[in-house]
Image (cartoon, rainbow, N blue to C red; front, side, top):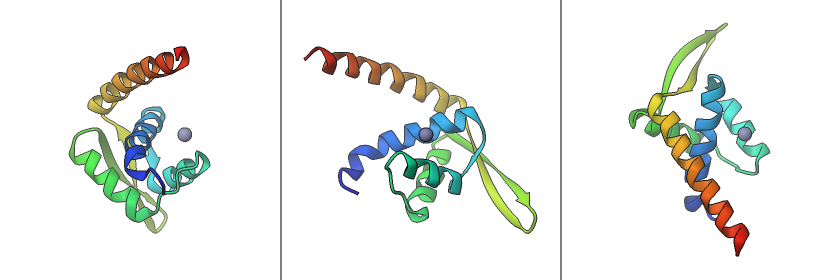
Length: 100
Ligand SMILES: [Zn+2]
Protein backbone atom coordinates (compact mmCIF):
# COMPACT_ATOMS: atom_id res chain seq x y z
CA UNK A 1 0.00 0.00 0.00
CA UNK A 2 1.20 3.48 -0.80
CA UNK A 3 1.98 5.62 2.27
CA UNK A 4 1.75 2.43 4.25
CA UNK A 5 4.25 3.24 6.99
CA UNK A 6 2.80 6.68 7.57
CA UNK A 7 -0.70 5.30 7.86
CA UNK A 8 0.08 2.41 10.15
CA UNK A 9 -0.50 4.67 13.17
CA UNK A 10 -3.97 5.42 11.89
CA UNK A 11 -4.66 1.75 11.36
CA UNK A 12 -3.65 1.10 14.98
CA UNK A 13 -6.00 3.83 16.19
CA UNK A 14 -8.76 2.31 14.16
CA UNK A 15 -8.13 -1.05 15.80
CA UNK A 16 -8.12 0.54 19.29
CA UNK A 17 -11.35 2.35 18.49
CA UNK A 18 -13.18 -0.85 17.59
CA UNK A 19 -11.59 -2.90 20.35
CA UNK A 20 -12.90 -0.25 22.78
CA UNK A 21 -16.46 -0.84 21.59
CA UNK A 22 -16.48 -4.64 21.68
CA UNK A 23 -14.07 -7.59 21.58
CA UNK A 24 -12.89 -8.06 18.00
CA UNK A 25 -11.16 -10.89 16.17
CA UNK A 26 -8.46 -10.48 13.54
CA UNK A 27 -10.55 -11.53 10.57
CA UNK A 28 -13.32 -9.10 11.48
CA UNK A 29 -10.71 -6.34 11.73
CA UNK A 30 -9.26 -7.21 8.31
CA UNK A 31 -12.73 -6.92 6.75
CA UNK A 32 -13.48 -3.71 8.63
CA UNK A 33 -10.20 -2.07 7.62
CA UNK A 34 -10.77 -3.09 3.99
CA UNK A 35 -14.11 -1.31 4.15
CA UNK A 36 -12.19 1.84 5.08
CA UNK A 37 -9.71 1.30 2.23
CA UNK A 38 -6.86 -0.21 4.24
CA UNK A 39 -5.85 -3.50 2.69
CA UNK A 40 -4.06 -5.55 5.33
CA UNK A 41 -3.10 -9.19 5.05
CA UNK A 42 -3.19 -11.48 8.09
CA UNK A 43 0.62 -11.50 7.81
CA UNK A 44 0.61 -7.76 8.53
CA UNK A 45 -2.28 -7.52 10.96
CA UNK A 46 -1.46 -10.34 13.38
CA UNK A 47 2.14 -9.27 14.09
CA UNK A 48 0.83 -5.73 14.60
CA UNK A 49 -1.82 -6.98 17.06
CA UNK A 50 0.82 -9.05 18.86
CA UNK A 51 3.07 -6.03 19.16
CA UNK A 52 0.44 -3.65 20.54
CA UNK A 53 -0.62 -6.37 22.97
CA UNK A 54 2.99 -6.77 24.15
CA UNK A 55 3.14 -3.00 24.54
CA UNK A 56 0.05 -3.11 26.75
CA UNK A 57 -2.50 -1.42 24.48
CA UNK A 58 -4.68 -4.46 23.88
CA UNK A 59 -5.48 -7.66 25.74
CA UNK A 60 -6.58 -10.87 24.10
CA UNK A 61 -8.33 -14.05 25.12
CA UNK A 62 -8.96 -17.26 23.22
CA UNK A 63 -12.52 -18.24 22.48
CA UNK A 64 -13.49 -21.65 21.22
CA UNK A 65 -16.03 -21.64 18.44
CA UNK A 66 -16.84 -25.25 17.61
CA UNK A 67 -13.54 -26.74 16.48
CA UNK A 68 -11.75 -23.48 15.87
CA UNK A 69 -10.18 -21.24 18.45
CA UNK A 70 -9.99 -17.55 17.78
CA UNK A 71 -8.37 -14.69 19.60
CA UNK A 72 -10.59 -11.84 20.73
CA UNK A 73 -8.95 -8.48 21.36
CA UNK A 74 -10.14 -5.82 23.77
CA UNK A 75 -8.58 -2.43 24.37
CA UNK A 76 -6.60 -2.05 27.62
CA UNK A 77 -6.50 1.13 29.75
CA UNK A 78 -3.30 2.21 28.02
CA UNK A 79 -4.96 1.82 24.62
CA UNK A 80 -7.99 3.79 25.77
CA UNK A 81 -5.67 6.59 26.96
CA UNK A 82 -3.73 6.51 23.70
CA UNK A 83 -6.94 6.74 21.76
CA UNK A 84 -8.12 9.77 23.76
CA UNK A 85 -4.79 11.58 23.26
CA UNK A 86 -4.74 10.79 19.55
CA UNK A 87 -8.33 11.95 19.17
CA UNK A 88 -7.49 15.32 20.74
CA UNK A 89 -4.44 15.72 18.48
CA UNK A 90 -6.37 14.77 15.37
CA UNK A 91 -9.07 17.29 16.21
CA UNK A 92 -6.38 19.94 16.65
CA UNK A 93 -4.87 19.03 13.31
CA UNK A 94 -8.21 19.07 11.55
CA UNK A 95 -9.06 22.47 13.04
CA UNK A 96 -5.70 23.84 11.89
CA UNK A 97 -5.87 22.50 8.36
CA UNK A 98 -9.43 23.82 8.15
CA UNK A 99 -8.15 27.35 8.85
CA UNK A 100 -5.50 27.35 6.15
ZN1 LIG B 1 -14.07 1.12 11.41
